[in-house]
Length: 234
Image 1 (cartoon, rainbow, N blue to C red):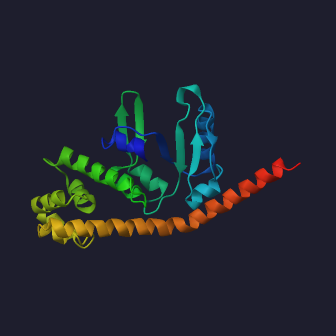
Image 2 (cartoon, rainbow, N blue to C red):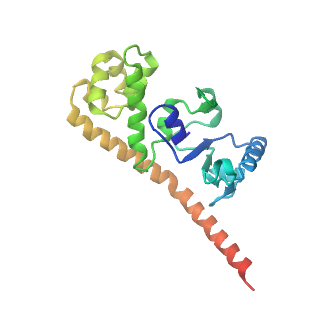
Image 3 (cartoon, rainbow, N blue to C red):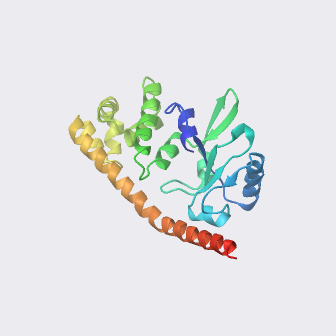
């Protein structure tokens, strides 16, 4: 659901870690723990690997120590802002066939939604993900792809192009994304400003979402530091 998924969709060349979204149920977490044990993966930060923290929306971070993957980081989540719950994500998943096996990744629309965070580095990736999909499919798009481009493209020129080619669909999309009206008017300068405002709104929403979660992370860090101090007392 992270950088590796972006690689598989052709929008990135490499990723230093692996991000997983999982179903946070006891039996499934036991299966994941068995896989992590094979990788000799250990938790490297708070929170600990417990179901209640995943259900809260926190990520659990691991570092692999097995020789075949030494140093690889794995981040595990179960809940994300603005993204549907796991059963729906699984129903919409994309199955990618690669030389070394089969991979289940977030659908492209779900991956784009998951990338709408407060982190500056995620926004160029959103742009790349949608543009790659557009350039691959622009000659013979299906209705779902056209709607996806109108909802998620972040390049003014391409938005104007899609709105011109598919004006009927674009007019129906204005209610969901008002800046499409500027694309229909072929106004790239106005679009640039509206896209920047759209990004600021999403980043602020993500900051607000993480505020209580960061408080919980700090609480867990204080508890861990306290336990460490007690263990070192003579």
